[in-house]
Image (cartoon, rainbow, N blue to C red; front, side, top):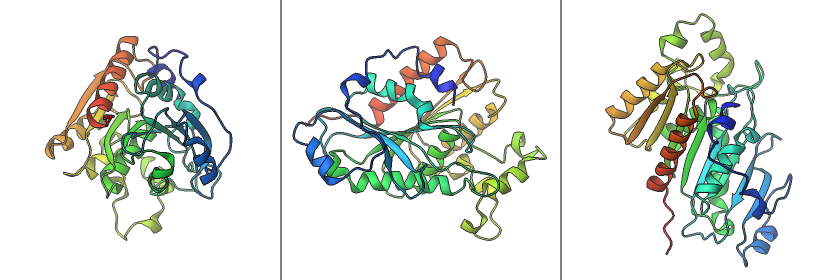
Length: 301
């Protein structure tokens, strides 16, 4: 999403990637990991495969001095209406984490984009996120990371982050979600009263993956999946957003309150993030940084 380039940062400089090595289009092998382990230098792996589809890749940023006991992981998920976008859109989010939380590992994820009518989004994109988490968990000792995760998502990516945490994170590996203008409730009249919405939802949903009679709008609404096991959530919305209404923020806020989930709901003047003020972007960055420190702290042993 374009707005993340504005959003995350007027704060970030150009200081971060120069200390990392980079390697393109690769799968991580034991030999590669073992070669990096002795020095524990910062290393970047790009386009790491986690599935058979060419779109199932992520970039992995491992910090200097990492250990399997201390180095927790931040997962970044791009937006694009579930049909477009790329992990490269989230470069400013990667920069933010590297600049202000340099001891965390970072995973910047691509997922298989929906293509109407052949490739549905739901629940396949949730399963993509699960595959990333499972692969990193399986490789955690070799990578020298601790498989505890925080998630930062923008727009559709925030929707995927919330859905994964609220519905699919059965092992409680996700410790927080930062939701930037994420759709949270498809039963909201903003969507439900749109005569084209049901048709769009039919295209987005793989009906074979759901029980007969499922209410697909409810089943894919993060707000309606909130439970007592949901993770702390940061909510950022614009009060004039033409794509994700402010009511999606208020509905999610109410559900999180209902289950006593720690959260913070912030509303900025403007639309879908692209037009938020510099003051708002700085506020977003500060609150996000505080959330990372609170819910995914690095404790040096």
